[in-house]
Amino acid sequence: MSLLLDYVNQQLNPTVQHPSFRAGDTVTVHYKIKEGDKERIQQYQGIVIMRQNHPATASFTVRKISNAVGVERIFPVNSPFIEKIEVNKHGIVRRAKLFYLRERTGKSARIREKIIKNTKA
Image (cartoon, rainbow, N blue to C red; front, side, top):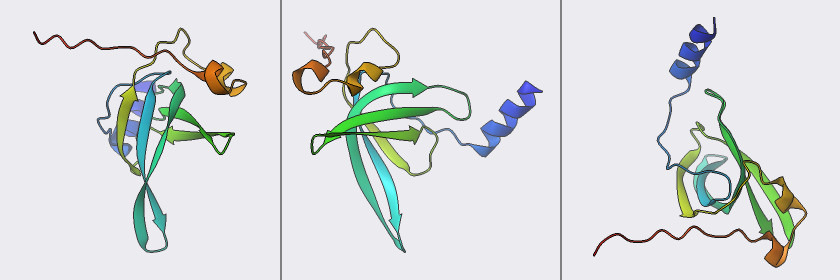
């Protein structure tokens, strides 16, 4: 029964190839917004605080600070409204869910950045 449900979900939800990212990474999500008959792309940049990887309903939560107020937004991974996802920084964290960032502001809310060395000699 579970295999049948997975098959139906795969047929209904086309998978889009996005770059790999995890909790702690800083990403920019280019999201399509329809206003009447017009369509525009809005960029939402923040830290991924959580990722849920269920096969058909995978989603991720992005948190940013806007006008000194924390704003979180949940994006479905397979949404047709996501134009693209850019990974700006890879963070070094030890947790899969970074809910402790909700209570922190300023310097204490920073995440160490993974420095990728260039191997070209």
